[in-house]
Image (cartoon, rainbow, N blue to C red; front, side):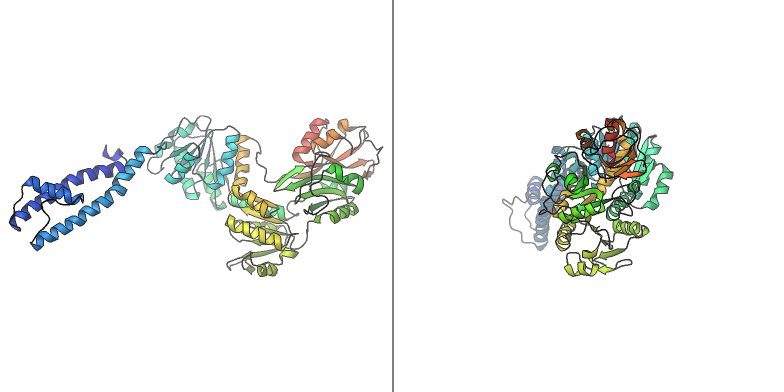
Amino acid sequence: MALQLKRSTRRLLALLALLPAAVLLMGTLYMLGMANLEAAPRTFLESLQWAAETLTTTGYGHDNHWRHPVMAVFVIVSDFLGLFLVILAFPVFVLPFLEERFEVRLPTALPAMGGRILVYRYGVVLGPLLEELTRAGLPFVVFEEDIATARTLHDRGIAVVHGRLGDAPAVLERARDARAVIANGGDHANASFTMLLRESGYRGSLYALADDPLYRAPMLRIGATDVFTPAHVLGAALASRASVRISPPAEGMHLLGSALGIGEFRVHPSSPLAGRRLGELRLRDELGVSVIGQWSEGVFTTAKGPDTTVGPGAILIVVGLHANLERVERLAMPIRRHGPVVVAGYGMVGHKVVELLRDADERCVVVDQAAGPGVEIVGNVLDTSTLDRAGVRDASAMILALSDDGESVFATAAVRDYAPGVPLIVRVLRSSNTARLYRSGADFAISVGQVAAQVLAYHLLDRQTIAVENRIRLARVGPGTLVGTHPWRNEALERTGATIVGIERGAQVLVEFDPDFSVQTSDMLCLCGSEASLERCQREFQIDSFKD
């Protein structure tokens, strides 16, 4: 029974037993001392009264002077003992007991788990995923071993259960009915959790997040359904934004041969394009180009008609003849696509970024504050001399893979001021800081939490709910119900976000269209847009299939 009591309760009970014993012992010693050393006998009741007054530091009445040295030492020691007990009793014994009585108690057993997702250990990497599950109406429970983290989650309204697997592994018995399980407790903790969960009878999907890809095979062997390394996926996302060799601006441009090109242009706030609607700019009529969409704060949106506003600081994606793209360039600011990629921060994510870029034959310059293998420039990116030595102004892109969001905010502002024309791609630790980095000047910022949310949401919700990157595609399709319409004057087509950038007619590929031009039944259309916009266009105009 005693073992089932909480630690604070056991402490308080021990204190309650100790105090009477201490009063009896000190009272007895005082009675003997007064009779034999001071020659002033006291009754047992009087001695107990003296002991109680001493231990509680309330002071003395009649007995306040002693002549024998032994009695004086005994009284002095008793005084300090009483003071020590008073100071110690409240914070160590009484307050913890009262806190447990009056604070909200955390659940220590899992609820019925039918239809719920079980999350083992919370971390910032799971923040965006839990938000997405909440929006999707999918219930979940976090099993958290750290009491402080569990209380924080409880205060935020998140369903949480506190416990320790080593103390009570039977707490996982109800987990056998869970819809799915996510293990986020570190590589070694995840292994123990996975084995205990499988031993408890759980047969469903178990997804583990690993720090080191070396743990993937062992985790699969002991029972994980799949193992993901979000830090490495994050590195791949950052690298793909920096290199057109890894992720070209648009897939399928070969369908138009060399006739058309695609350009990326950052719209400077002072540019005549900034803040204006496409209908006012008349870029098709005046410059012969089609605006496919724009990147703004890491989100790609397709252009949907003349009311689309070009955002200051946005990156426009424009398709047209090369000579016409040069005319757009003079109005905006080109995105440089030559020169090395500068990577600042050579931790786990930085290593992966550099590895992928070099596998794609990109030239990299690695910057870090600490010297080490692979680091070419040692210095702080806040120092312009470091940026000079790294050749940032001549870079095709710069990736900040730093390990602190506060440092990343300062570094983003410093690099953007130093090299305003260089694409700046930033790794984020906490998703909540993403907006701050965009305000500081980042072109693309992504957190490991966003990556983990995308990967796990795909498996848990059967759909890709958080897009790390919205790919632009060029597709070759039949005309469907667009026959008889003008390629650039169709409001219904513009609303889908897809754009006709070329028409294959016989042996020719037409990229400019007179006002009286119309689509013919035998034409093949070259449509450009995001995956979602192409799918909308396919449904709207009864286009059978896409042909890359």
